[in-house]
Length: 138
Image 1 (cartoon, helix red, strand yellow):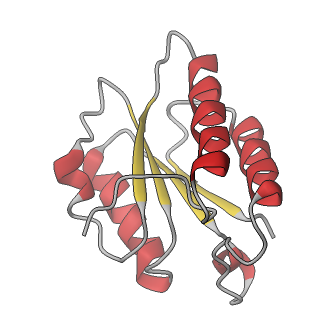
Image 2: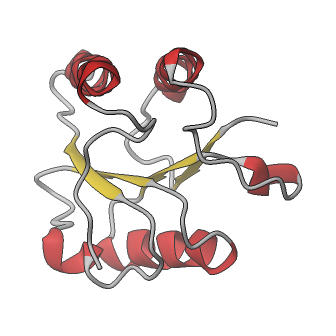
Image 3: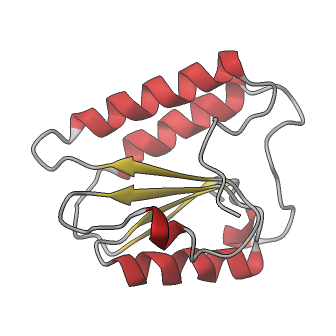
């Protein structure tokens, strides 16, 4: 079972294999016992969820669906200038887990990987917990 769950409409055509590999490396480097594990079954063993929908309401609905089963799972919400997913939409997501919103640029798809690398690797050195410093919306 993958530790990263991706909920996506597939419209952005993001290569998640590379991002999932970054998360795996980041979790392997995390201090033992600091990565959130649910110990449930199948997809519920995920430790992180990426939400990638172009329509804001669909992104909120997908995030709330996974949070209904796992309220503490950290979320990474992908947005772009066309989709108009904003902070007010994140406030509609239930649960207690952390959230981060990151910008996708269709003209420079590798920029997302660079941002993820910088964000994840910086968090290993800055934090005692294995959740990168992300926006908390409660």
